[in-house]
Amino acid sequence: MTSGQAVAPTLKRRFGRVDEPFDMPSRDRRPASESDESAPEPTAGDAHPWRLVVLLTLLTIGLGMLVSLWLMPLALHYHGWYAPQDSWPSLLAAQYVSAGAFGYVYSSSVFYVVTPLLALILAPVTLLGDHLNLTYNWPYQIPHPTIWLIYGPYAFALCAPIFWTARKLAYQVGLGARAGLIQWGTLIMAVIPMAVLYGHFEDVLGLACVMLAVTLLFREKWPQAALAMGFAIAFKQWALMGLPLLVALAPRDQRVRMTVRSLIVPAALVALPLIKDFSHAKEALLEAKSYPHGIQHSALWLAHPGQIVVGTPGRSVALVFAVVLAWWLRDRDELPLVLGAFGVVFLSRLLFEPRILFYYLGPGLMFLWLHERLTTGHWWRVPIAGCLFMAYFHIHLRPLLWWPAAFVFIGILIWPAARDVLRRTASPEPETEAEPLLAA
Image 1 (cartoon, rainbow, N blue to C red):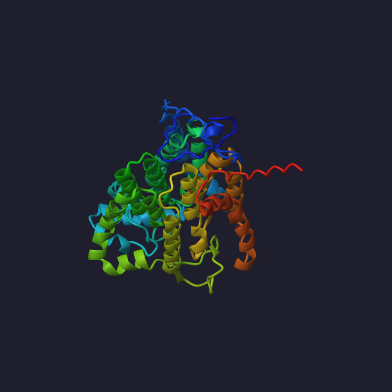
Image 2: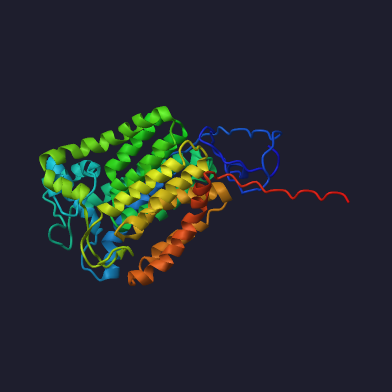
């Protein structure tokens, strides 16, 4: 390959521990020529795949327990432990599972409105906790819910898969030399907001499965990619937004089978609750309510920000958007374009939810960050803008006053990837050369 040429890597190309300009196009304007040679494909593997995974998992456990047992009570002047409030509905559902009442998990709490795979994984915690007569922080808030001493470390340890999948995805797209940096970024932009601060462990596991599905897609392992996406949906419904794109990027003869495989696991998990406890399951899965809260920000299109609303209409529009984008990018195979498209799809969730929180940014930021590195060679725009946007969520104004700056942040984060999506390519546009002047 001649010097200066940037080629967008595709699904059929394999990468190892590299991080060269070849894999991170700088948007050079010179078009390719037939004389350009193909660059050699590096084959180096990952010598230490688990070292940083273990370290970051232990750090997450320590940080999560430090925040809940000391830092948050200190900041809020609360005399007790302050475990994330959103972590309790999943544990209550797990209590139903450990008691043999999986079919009635949606009767456990009106706030339990997610697909129930996490409840199955948390069942050992409630089984042990009930055997030891430990106390829960529900339905009454108590200063020291002793179940948290088991639940907290166990749940924070469940963040290990996302550190592993982040590393696998980094190697797959040619960023193996910076895999550690990507894992640290995963901690900051995804794990801390989702798990440590909000207790949404199902979101962390869902994102881990989505990243694994994309990695398997790049390896052309279609059945495994579909199954991984199915597990992502079984953890949290927002992963369903990534399914149309995953299917559209696969070969045509694989699409129907991938769709079926992706829906088998979540369908099987919700089938029993729908049969046993239809009214509660239908309300949780199809009519989930969004409650007003001081830490949330209401959508501009929400007529009455202070009212309880059903989020299904907006989420249905988000799914339609995901289908349209998937149709637009069908059969494309450029790695940066695929990563950017997933980032656009997941970050667009902010525009369709009736109320948003800053941990919603996590999935979109991770894919947009990888897109930034592969297309520009830089690391800074997405992490800086993303963290500043998360900080901006702590400023509470009326929607008409809060959203203009939010749109600026969204534009900074999403525009480079959205531009590539609109062009259907991440390769640089060739520069038209001026025609020579005719001799007089």
